Image (cartoon, rainbow, N blue to C red; front, side, top):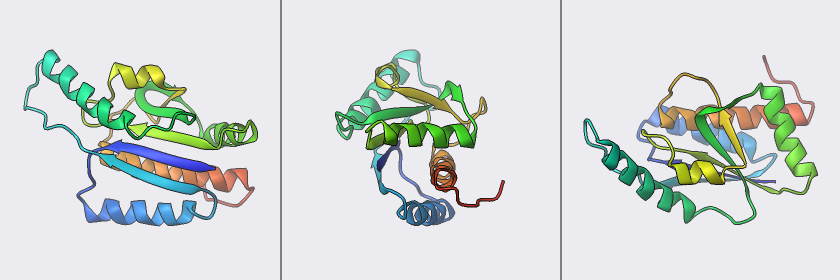
Length: 159
């Protein structure tokens, strides 16, 4: 299994970098993991709809450059499907069993994801109807991927 996370924006806070490194190390027991950061566009204080659209398009171009052709794409979207940890584990396991060895998770920037990226998504995932900083979402996603592998392998993990 190969898991790629494409995320818009850089991690600036050390505590988030530490958590990302820890979960990356834990996941490496189960899967190859690549984390790709693409640059985010500077967003004005109160962007117009046209400015938002241009920003999302530029970020989408950067994301698409790193997307593998045969990868199963899971986008993190506020309007995506909310699932339990067990359901996410089942999804990952089912993909593996069906021969999908590459899964790519995409985390948008502060404005979310462009329509183009959302349209190529094989599965739209939501962690909550609440909004989280995209940097923090990377940690939450990694924790859930790690939890998924523990569940798949029947290993204990606190609830």
